[in-house]
Length: 420
Image (cartoon, rainbow, N blue to C red; front, side, top):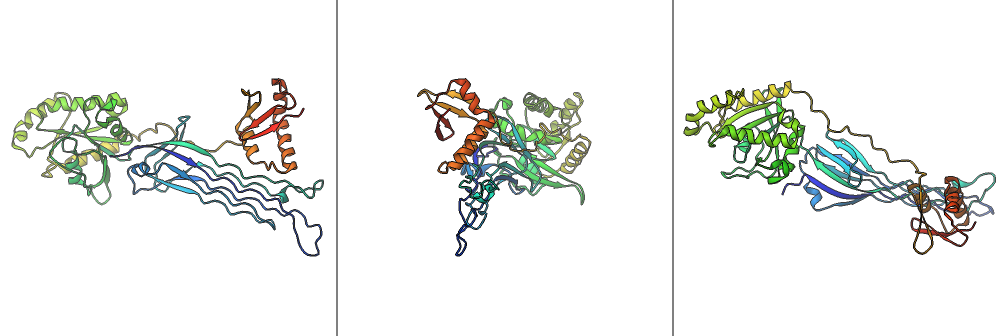
């Protein structure tokens, strides 16, 4: 089964802990602080790989985690940074935050990359807290937690021209006739279950990237026959080759049905330039009916081309018409401009909630990260966290909410006893 949507869980690495250490050397009775900083945690990066054209790899692996940074060492040594987790995706991958729906990126170009979760910074060692008033600090920082998020990936293949039509119209045969692509071909409907790409060369300089879109049936815009999965791949194309089975009972009705599905899914799809080609002209019955079929289309203002994908008759003319349509079509407007994703700075916003046991919960991105980076076993580290609570206004907010001495205050996974 072709996979063009995927959901993955990613986690960047945590920064390494800073170290509390004092220089110990012979004949140096009062060595100063020399605890080093922790290394930065690895980030999670999506990178475009032009050799991929599906999201099938995510069927077998849906969780990715970058490495944590190493802890700082003595003699002011900084810990090694964690390795990044690089995830390969095909060109045309749209990346969304699953919870918020925010678009993080639209990955199109080969080699293009996007950092989707940044590793936490390494905690500072006690050498970084030394100053003229405190020359022997017994405190440091733990590493900052890395970002975690769920991503929704959606693939929209990138092609110049999409080949559309009802099942068994000969789309795969046409793609095989004009490119080196080798999709599965058989004499029954729904042979093609995955979109295929191929490059058709008109001459030494002109080439078209073609996408064979599996057959669209009635109700495709609502998902019938996996229609919505296939229709989205047409959105990036500049023009369409609309291939029609010349042996059908009513080719014009087939043409109208496919265009109706395109318009119902996205009105812009039906407005793309179309090259209408009636296939299987090599069959005697179709060749005999061709004048009537051509006249019926011309009465609707459409100039169809006769083609036989199997016999390679008329395929060059169809490609030439598709090239002209592609050249005259405007660049497809980006549905949503790719933002430059930057994780937020320390967020000072917080909320206070009374818990069932009478304690208090302080929730907020910034304050929770600060708690996770605090060495609670060192008194100086605890005092530093208390100063941060006062600076952010948490203490005043707790007083206003009715906190009393002895109450339990919880921040993230840590808890303190309120003393006012």
